[in-house]
Image (cartoon, rainbow, N blue to C red; front, side, top):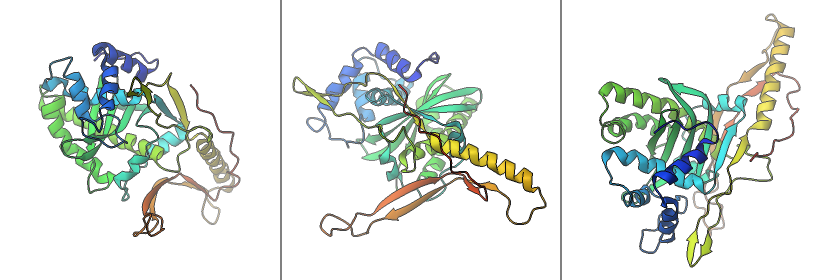
Amino acid sequence: MSSIPLTCRPTDLVAEYGRMYPNCWLAVDLLRSRRGLDLVAWPSWCFLPLTGAFEILSTVCSPSVLELADFSSFTALATWRVTQGIYRFEPEIYEAVCNTRPTIEIPFNILYKMPEWCVYIQTQRMESHGVHLYGAFAHLEWNARTARTHLILVFDTNEGLLPSRIEIGQWNLAEAIDRLNSELQVAAAFLWMPLATPEEQAIFRNIILTFSGPVVSLLLYLCSQAAEIGDGTHAPRNPQPKTVRGLARQFPADKPTTWEVGVRLGAALRQARRSEEAENAEKGSSSAGPRPHIRRAHWHGFWTGSREGDHRSGKEKRRFDLRWLPPIAVKVTDASVLPAVVRPVT
């Protein structure tokens, strides 16, 4: 696929796929209207299973091994099209979150808190082997055959769309990313790059692995309750379908919405770093006691509620909450002044 001009890349990609597969978006609506009728009722958190994309695309083209990557890309674009949320991180927060890899026991169900069915996360200066990453689509997919959940990442690069699938199971997200390497060996050999040399396949795996860790961390930030998305008065959400001639239609958003993420916290971190530098310069290396510094960011997860909690016992059901604890200013004075929150831009 040729490179898309950097205007609004996600909408350009949606338009391109609409030209490649005429009437495909109407076909998505019609297929979703059959959910629970003649089709298996897939979970509500999954907008369109990969098998649905296969059914739609196989009616307009002859499926082949080389086209399998298109099914993942098409599913991501079909899902993103109805909400069109673009998430732009404040640079200070972006760098800190990318460098905070999931190492604690983070269960996969935190991903069900994704703000929309599919999000597009803008990336900043991320590159591997000459491949530049503009952003990444992320959504959850349900496998109708195995009844398993997958986190689908579709990387938007100058070389086209690169899909990747992270299988979710009885392991935490850190282990899921570790498992990705072995899964990519199969994907590169049989699905995405069957005609490539072993060296080219190895480069492909390295690119995906390089991008996956930071993007998953950014996604976890959006899913965590600590995330600062927008201005606090408007929040991203999935739209309700509209009934047209007896069919439930999921119309696309009128236009993309760019949600600014972490603006207030990023400003506080910059101010804390300036204060740290000023106090370090004033006290010098010979001063007694701990010097002002910024404690490294990390993930913190905890369980709330009762193990026996349900509607019958009246106790709150046990659930996992995730917090991204930002770099903390230690021994720094007056780091509490925060600017006004920036509203989401459209």
